[in-house]
Length: 350
Image (tube, rainbow, N blue to C red; front, side, top):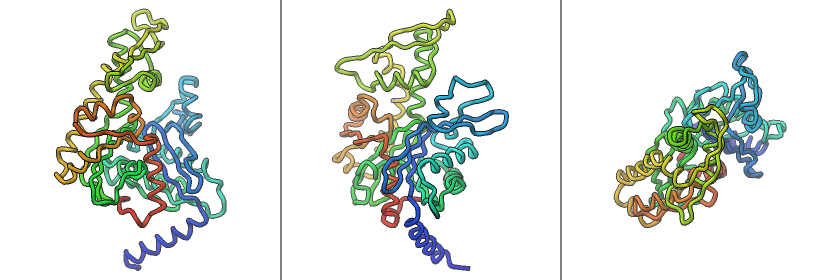
């Protein structure tokens, strides 16, 4: 039997050789959306992490955009499933089917085209959950699969100096999880995560509208509200929009006007949890690294980083400069792609 180090070396060389015949993939496997970066071609796929399944036969009927379009327009036995919850695989078979669909969609299936894949995962998941993600990718067609912590991937994708001996703080707020990490010399020095993020904000808007306006709306409407008029900090010019739902008293369709102040009140609790997580991470960061963060600032990534005034709120609460990544939605997937390009240069994949 070959020694472990020899076997690992052979595996890496074979992966490098096969890389000439295939296209490496970087995948941001998100609770809400999945993004896929193909080596040499850029980001080739951005689709909802949704699968339409026949509940009687368990047959997969549609994936991604096609599955999302089917929501609310299908017979009762067809249901839309989100196979990941809070960034963790909740349904292994459905996740595998989704990954297989997305990998096939971006590849041409040339001879020997079995890609190396790196997948961004929440840093707080267990080793069992990590292995489940890797196994799902391999069974979906990958020749080899590695996972990388999403905060590290986001920091790489945002262009932060992760390999230098200075502290860099990244706050990655996606659909299912919020992760805060301080990175130095290619490693995570301190990090915390919580399963409160964009989806919890959507749910908070649904609850607010229900309790305060006696109107029932769906989470897709709530997400639209968050994107269009949501804010974490008072705006110079507040906004409003008309929303439609079902009147809880009469049961009939009804329209109401919702303001950005009301939305801010609705999401105050989940935002407070995010801010507290940043404070706790700063508190447990070693003094030298904390001083670096104070000087260099905090970087925001993930879809919720686009929420108006979030940088101002966190800066006001921590007294630290806060910046938003140039493209916060793609920071993780760009980071996975960069990791693949320098596979032997970064030590942070597990």
